[in-house]
Length: 428
Ligand code: URA
Image (cartoon, rainbow, N blue to C red):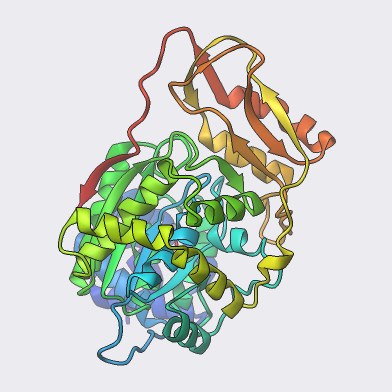
C-alpha cells in the first residue's frame, strides 16, 4: 500500500502521479481517511508543480465519481450549460438559462456562490424572496424536464469531493491552480450529463485569471477535459477589466437581468450573453450558422417568451417576483477631475461590495442582498469633474465607508484610452 505521504512527496518533487494514486487520494479524502492537513499539502504541491493532462483527467474523473450523475431519458431535448469563471456584475446565467430553454434546449445549471471579490449566481437569485437554491437531484431533473431550465447549487450528491476540497483550497491559498480549477468545475458540469457546454473564461482585474495568457491556458484545459468526456465544449475569453453590465451586487443584478430579458438594455451585457448562447445553439445544431442563432435568440427576447420563462423558473424554485424589493436609496460617487476613464480596478469594486455586506468575509456571513453599485462610466469615456462615476445602493453611513475605495478604483487620464474589446478569443 502506498502511504499518502509518499504520493504527496512524488508531487512535491514534480513527478506525475498515476491514475490509481490520484483515485486513492480523492477517495481517501472523501471518506475522511486522509486528513485535511495531508490534503492541504497535496493541494499546495499541485498548485506549485502543476499536473499533466492525464493527471488532470484522472483528478476530474475521481471527483466526478465521488458523487452521482444526472440521468436523462433518451431522446429528450439536448442538455446544455454555461459556466463562467466569475467576475463582477456577471449575471449572464440569469438571462441565458431561460433564453436557451425557449430555444428547445434543457438547462440543468449548477451554479456557485461568491468567491474572493466575485459575486455568485446563487447569492443573486436569493435576492428573490422564497427562491430555493438547494434543490435535490430529483427536483433538478424534474424542473428541468417540466420548465426547461433550473439554476441551483451543487447538492451533496454532486461531486462531494469537490465541495470538501474546494473549502480547503479557499483557506490554503490554493484556488488559482489550473488543474485544480479544471477538475473542480468540470466534475460538477460533467455530473449534469450534458450534450454541450460553453465556458466564459474571464481575465483582467476583476477575474481570477489576471492575464489573458493564464485565462487562455485555463480555457484550453477546460475545453480539452470536456471534449475528452464526450461533451461538445467551447470557451470564450472575455474581458473583466470593468464590470459586466451596469449593476454589481445581488438585488440590483436581478433587476438588470430582468431588464435585459425585457429587451430594454441591449448593451455589452446582452452582447456577451448572446455570444455564449450562439455557441450552444451551434454546438447542439439548433442553428446551422451564427446569424441564424443570433436571430433565434433575439426573437425569444422580442416576443417576451424569455422573460416569461424566467418567471416560470423562479416560480418553480419557490421564488416570488411580486415580492421583489425595488432598488433602494443610492448615493453618487463623483469624478474628482476632468479627463478620460483610463482603468477601473474591478476587483476593488467587488471588495467594496463585500465591505457593504453584499458578499461574505467569512463563510458564515449573511448577505445583505439590497446593497450594490451601478457603474455610470466605462473605460474610454470622457468625463467632467463632478460628473457621477457610479451610484452606491446603501445607506449614507455605509457609503461613506467605501467612498475612497470606490473613487480610487477609477483612474482618470488626460488622454483617451481605447475602449476594451469584450470578447477576445474563442477556444474550441
Ligand atoms: N469555480 C469552481 O467551481 N471551482 C474552482 O476551483 C474555481 C471556480
